[in-house]
Structures are given as structure tokens and as C-alpha cells.
Image 1 (cartoon, helix red, strand yellow):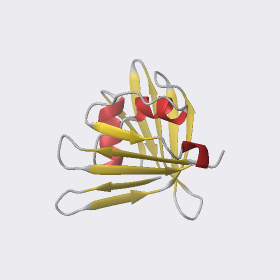
Image 2 (cartoon, rainbow, N blue to C red):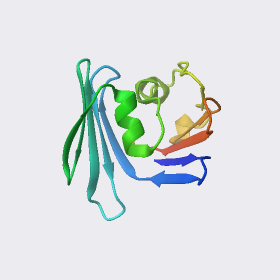
Image 3 (tube, helix red, strand yellow):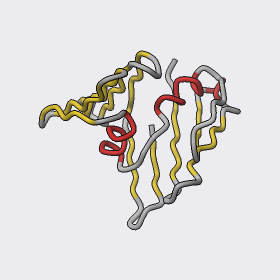
Image 4 (cartoon, rainbow, N blue to C red):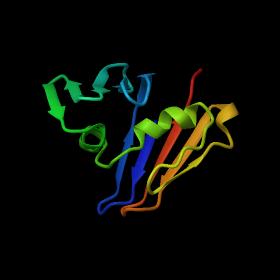
Length: 124
């Protein structure tokens, strides 16, 4: 997973990831280059939590949780559809599923600013 945000200064984030569950209830594990777990994001209809080596934090929504971890809101709920080949609309985002059969997915946020690009390489 790679995320580039055209902020001032620009932000870049990359990690290996494991995504489990579904849009309404799931888990996203972010893994560093040495194989260590950087963070575990868990969500359900009534909770969104971040687990790191520094402890656990609660958030009011999955969007707030994703923003805390990556510095920008991510369309995690829509990501489940995109990975299944359904180009579900996500506010401000455009997904390119044309290379999904090759294990590649690119989604670009055009609004709100700053622009962002999410790139996924899948190991199925």
C-alpha cells in the first residue's frame, strides 16, 4: 500500500497491509518493512479503534481513525467493493480498477484538497 498526499509539505506513507472483514466491521493491519506491525485499525458499527505499540485509541468513526493513521481520510469502506471489482462511488475519489486482474488498484482523490493517490499491490 502506498499513499501520497499533495499537502504542504507533501506526505508519503507505505506499508504492507492485511485487510479482513467487510465494510461494516473489519480490521486493517499495517506492517512495516521489517515485518513489524505498525498499527491495527478495527471498526464496527459502534466503534473504531487504533492499536499501536503506544496503546489503544478510540475514534468516533472509521474516517477519523484512518485520518489519524495516514494523515488523510481514506475510502476504506469502498475499498472492499473495489477489491471485489465493483467501482463503488466514494466522495471525491476515482478508482481505476483496470489492472485489478493483475493485482493492481489505484484510487485518486481529487476533492477535497489536498489531492491524494492510493496505490495497492495485491498478493492474492
